[in-house]
Length: 542
Image (cartoon, rainbow, N blue to C red; front, side, top):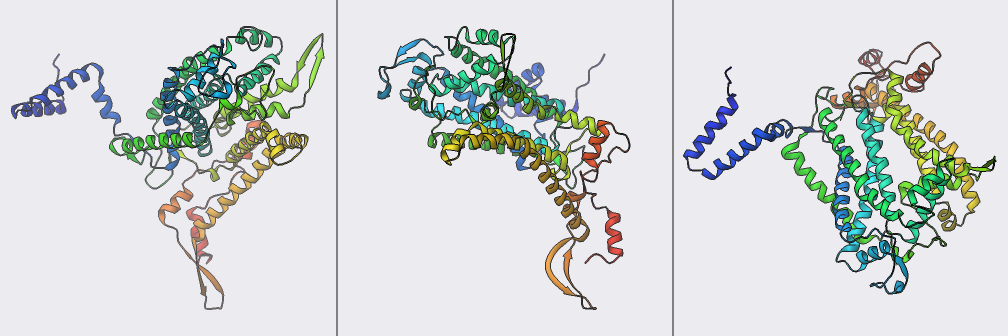
């Protein structure tokens, strides 16, 4: 068998030989090392096929980059903090730089956190950057997933990547809770006590889970070391694996893009990875890092010296978790204290029902892509994004979900709202209870009608053109406003979306949902070339 040498390889060897003849010996050795490495790991071939990958040039795609860069900041600052933090609940006497707490019995976890904050050079700044980066990371993931949801970027073939993103969001929230529990201060200890009560509400196995997690009665001596292992090793490791898988699928499936001239389901219009996008991404990373550092330097977060060490017989006034866990606390705060007593056992529905609602509300977003695919029966690969107005029911469902999240978030801070605005706490609780059922319905209907109104406006723009503000008098005395035709690019954007036909006939659940999505109440028929021609022929255009 004869092996043929590819033409590009022959040309490269010839160029290297000529370079060696001209005396560039060092470059030749470098190229030989590169050839040796490429022959064993294939880096050159891999880079050659991916370094010119195209990325769409739209601001909304930077939301995912904020997630990635804030995660990098979390890892970098977290590594620094682990060098000084002691995950132990052994009691010691505090004797540090913060005089008001001198002589107090504290845990080693609290003592080492105080040492980081007051005695380690730059420790407080790094601690605050770490905490603020975690908040930005989860907020960016939340907004990024909403962008993907409202534009339909989760459709085939990206359903699995959507689940990876949801897993990152859920694990980020969980790891954030573990992280702010580690200092063992009064605020974080109150949060751990809250979780312990939730676990105890689980029927039959709740007490066993509590004893297994805490290693005995609350608070025990093992919860901080165990949370530390979860926060530093297990959860970040899983998140890193999901993140790598997420990025691999992004490269494999290529990016989605908004409809426009020259953009189809089979191409991507934008900037190449090298050199344009890489330069912009590098600058954007330092921008995210810089903004996070500036916020951390200006705004204090989690001042544990003001809270003091945790004691089981105390609860800090106005205790609030980080924002992403506030809606879980809100569910429990506004839930009536219902209980069922039977056969000598008590079932605390006031805690158990919110505990079950918490993953349910999050899970509704996770399973939505599969529900929509089942309704539409659309099995094609979709790489062009929807404008949110062109999917009124989906957009309304997303807005309703966000409103439900915000209502329960307000419930999580009902005491603060009551004290700051001089309201009755009981009135606040009942307002949130009512809003839990009414606000999502109202937001759904308002958003759906808003989207339909925008669709009608787009239809009028396509048929009549843009209003110029110039008034013209016709020969028979009528005054009309002069309209200008839209540019071809604008016309394409307003008419490129598809409008599926609803399933006709049948009373099955799928048929009803299809009519709700794509019937008269779900979309406005877009303007077609035939509509424009008939309008012009009838004298309806100006």
